[in-house]
Length: 244
Image (tube, rainbow, N blue to C red; front, side, top):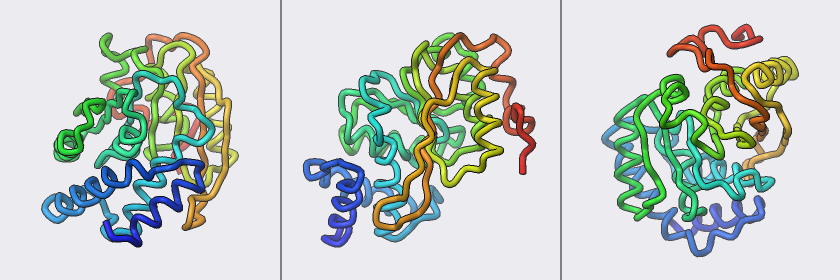
C-alpha cells in the first residue's frame, strides 16, 4: 500500500470514529492479496488502490457505525464476494468469529486463503446459500449478527437474514440510498419473518461523499418454519415487494 493509500485508509476510518494505525499492515497485506488474485480470477470490479481502500475497506468498516456489532460473538456475512465486509471487520475485531458466506466457490477460496495469509483464525468461510443455511439446524438461529453489503432489496435481506439470527440478534444491512417504498416493504417483511426495523442511518461514505444507508433489523420473535423459502424464491418473489 502506498503512503497515499495509507492516508486514505486512516482518514476514512477516522471519519467513522476508528483508529486503524495498528491494523494498517494487515490492510496493506489484504490489498496486495486482492490485487494479485484479481489479476488471475475476477473477484472484484474495483482495481485501483483508492477504490479498493475507500469502496471496499472503509465502506466495510462503516458497518461499525453506531456500535451495532458490539458484543457479538458469531457474525455471518451474506454474499461476501471477495470478503467484504467480513475481512476488514475481522481485522478490526479479532475476538469475534466471522462466517463469510457466498455461493461462488472461487470467491470463498480467495477469502479462505486471505484469512490464512493474514493469520485471521476468527474467519470461517462457507460456500453456500442463505436459504440453505437458514434451514440447517447447525446454522438456523446460530448467529448474533448478520451483515450484508449491497446484496439485495431489504425485504429479501429480511427473509434471508432473520432465520439465521438468535433471539435479540440484529441484521445490519449496508445499502446505498433507499426509497420509502423499499423501506416500507422491508418493515413488512421483517415483521412477517420475526423482526422489526430499528435503525435507518443515512450517511455519506468518508472522503468520497457517496450516499449510504445502514439499516438495522432486530430479531424480536421466532421465524416461522416456512422461512426462508427454497433457493431462489426470495429473490424472484420478494415479500411485499415487486422487484423494480
